[in-house]
Image 1 (cartoon, protein in one colour):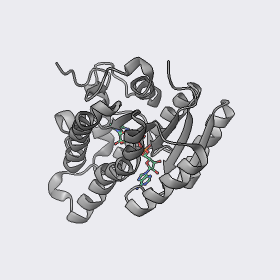
Image 2 (image 1 turned 90 degrees about the vertical axis):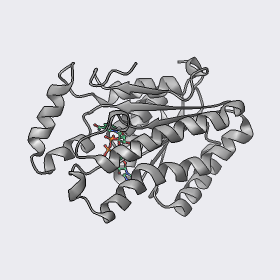
Image 3 (image 1 turned 30 degrees about the horizontal axis):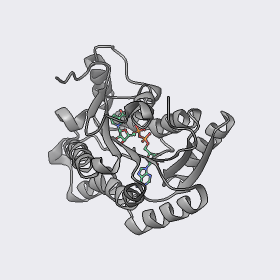
Length: 254
Ligand SMILES: NC(=O)c1ccc[n+]([C@@H]2O[C@H](COP(=O)([O-])OP(=O)(O)OC[C@H]3O[C@@H](n4cnc5c(N)ncnc54)[C@H](O)[C@@H]3O)[C@@H](O)[C@H]2O)c1
C-alpha cells in the first residue's frame, strides 16, 4: 500500500490479539510501530515478532487510562522515534454481564479503557498532526457500537461514543489533512473473545455468537489488520468520518 514507508504508527493495546496483527501489518509496509500497552510482556512479544519479520517497533509500557502517564509516554516515544503520523486507538476491554448485574465500579473501569484511554491519546497526539497538517487515525470500535451487544451495554455505549468521537474529529480536522475513521469488528479470535467463556453460560453465548455469523466462523485478527492499514495509507486519503464493519456479514449496514 502506498504511503506508509517510514511513517510512525502508534497502536494502543498493541500487545493484544488485534493490536499485534495490526502492528505486524504496519511494519510489513515499512512503518515504525509504537506498541503502547500496560502489559510489558505482551508488548515486548509484539516487538519481537515484528523484528523477527524484519520490521521496526518499540514497546511502550503505559496505563492508557492515566492522562499524565500517556502524555509522558508519547513525549518520550516521539523524542526517540519521531513525530506520530498514524494513530490506531485499538485498546479495549469488556466483561460480558447483563446491565442490571453490573456496578458503578465496573462502569468506571469500562469507560476508562474504552473511552478515556482514547481521549487521552488523541488529546496528546492530534496537536502534532494538526501542526504538521497530516495524520491518519483509526478507531477500533465494534459492531456493538452500531447495533448494541447483549450483555455488553456499557461497552456498547463506549463503542458508539468512539464512532461519534471519530466523526466529530474527522469534521474538526479535515482541513488540516487528518483523516479519522472507525473499524467495527464482529467477534474475532483474541484473548478478549475467549474471556466470554469465563462468564455465566459463556460457552453457550460463545457458540451462539459463532452461529449468528453468516460465514459461520469468528474473525481472525489478520482479517481486521488489512482494513486498518489501508485506511492509514495514501490509498485512503479521501476517506474520512466513515465506519466499516468487518464481521463476516454479521451486520450489514446500508
Ligand atoms: N475480539 C473481539 O471479538 C472484538 C470485537 C469487536 C471489537 N473489538 C475491539 O478490538 C480492540 C482490540 O481487541 P482485542 O480482542 O485484540 O483485545 P485483547 O484483549 O486481545 O487486547 C487488548 C490489549 O489492551 C491492553 N490494555 C488493556 N487495558 C489497558 C490499559 N488501561 N492501558 C494499556 N493497555 C491496556 C491489554 O494488555 C491487551 O494487550 C478492542 O478495542 C476491542 O474492544 C474486539
